[in-house]
View 1 (tube, one colour):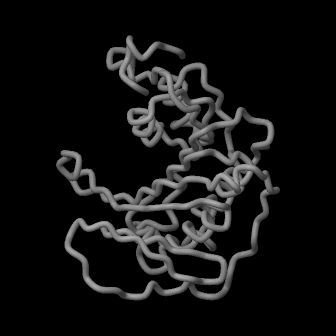
View 2 (cartoon, rainbow, N blue to C red):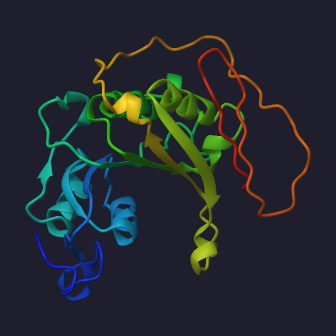
Length: 240
């Protein structure tokens, strides 16, 4: 599972070996809601590093991962994981379930959806692990009305993270289809990393999420970040 950077590209895969991940020098990565490790391979291609463990309870996805990530422990259902007992990581990735967010579903949302509410368990893991970097991915509908982006960002702020987000289309990197996705990168503030609060599940809020205030129009592609106060919550906005 280990290889030198001279022999392989950073965080690369061996094309002739069934897309098997090859660890390199770099950060230790932990993966939640792993799927087939697409998000993890993308992160590792930029940062390098090795994947210490992953969490995937779908049997079909887990079968692929045994080949793609040989020798890496599968923690299984992350709701049953004791994150105080796993190897510490510097980078945490999470492509949490989108079924209750996607336009193709019933859009029950993060608070009421039986699958997408797994986001709260991801936050519990962040509270315990305190990684330096968190990378989150979900469908573009996350930023729609009642999609849950405010809940995601608010939870990260309360957990001690500073987050930015942006929409990226598959076509933006040369694919022949749109397939728009929201990506968030989050850094855990140093003061927050010095403590390890116990994970707590807050009851679902019944009040509607705050509406983002409209602002002046910016040129296409311009960077934009703002914060909307809602109790202890913050919403970071980026153009899509």
